[in-house]
Each structure stands twice: as structure tokens, then as C-alpha cells.
Image 1 (tube, rainbow, N blue to C red):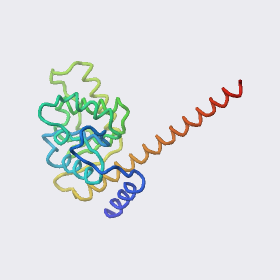
Image 2: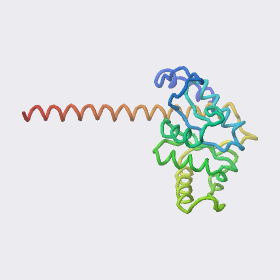
Image 3: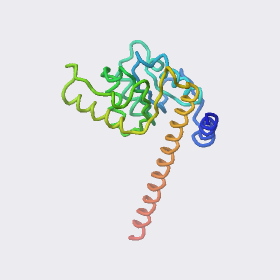
Image 4: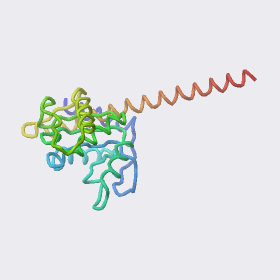
Length: 210
């Protein structure tokens, strides 16, 4: 089963999406996948591994520790990356909801109408809850709670870092991301075709009147 997941992902990757060879040093290419995560929980494990795996597959993932340098202003780098990405991967972990930045990124992903693949890492959806520490406004808390509920009720993946099969998980996560990207490409192509047909029809109607 594991080989089948990986094989299907690679087939879609090579024959449908065909992403460009990644060059991490290139200045400002748009990112394909924005990885939303709690650094203290997952940066050195699941988030870092996914970033490296996606990069080796030829995608352009965004992970703050890899794509930002000292001196960069957080919102000036992160917000455009979210708005420009194709898909978001939200890695929920035990301390995720303690982070203002995690919740802001998640809210912006959903507000920007990006597809989000939730990964529940060492935590159950029911355990995720926005807590008022007195540092966020009522409006912000409502925004964060809404985004969290949207993500919790989206079909995602689960992983236990102590007992889980890392290789199988990476292949399954890659498969899920690629299938969603393929669906997005198909939707965008359909929208473009519809727009072209409509434009031609309006042009023909305009000339027929004259």
C-alpha cells in the first residue's frame, strides 16, 4: 500500500503538474505549499521533513526557518507567501493554539480561500481550542476560533510521532497534496475555458448586432 501511494504521487507529479526544478536561492518565486506549523513542536521533525520532502519532489514549499533570513519582517514575508501559495498544510500540535502567528496564518489561509490540508500531529481535533491570554482582541479571538473550527471540520491526516511510520506518512501526505494540486489545476483550467467561451460569445453577439 505504501508503494502504491508513492507511485501514484510521483505519476501525478511527473505527468500532470510538472513543477520546475527548485532553486532555493532564487529570490522571489511564488510558493506552491505554505507550511503552517508551531516551530517549537514540529520544526525539527514533521514540518522540517515535509518541507525537505516537498522540495526534493520539485515543489516550492514555504517554511519560515528556510525561506526567511535575519532582518526579515514576519508579516511582510509570511502574508504575501500565504496569499500567493496554491495550497496550505496546517500541522496542528499540542502547543499550536498558544501561538498568535500560527492562528493568524491559519485564518489568512482560509480567508484567502486556499485549500488547507490539516495534519493532526500528537493531538486530537477536539483538543484544539483558542485560549484568551489577554493579548488578543475579541475580534481577533473570534477570527482565530472561526478559522480553527473550519480546519477541524476538514478531512485531514493524523500522525503519532512516537508510534507512527514516518516513511508511510511522508508518502501519504505528499499524495494528498499532489491530488489537491491536480484538482486545483483542473478547476483553474475549467474556469479559463469558461471565460474564453464567454468572451467569444460576447464578441460574436457584439458583431452580430452591428
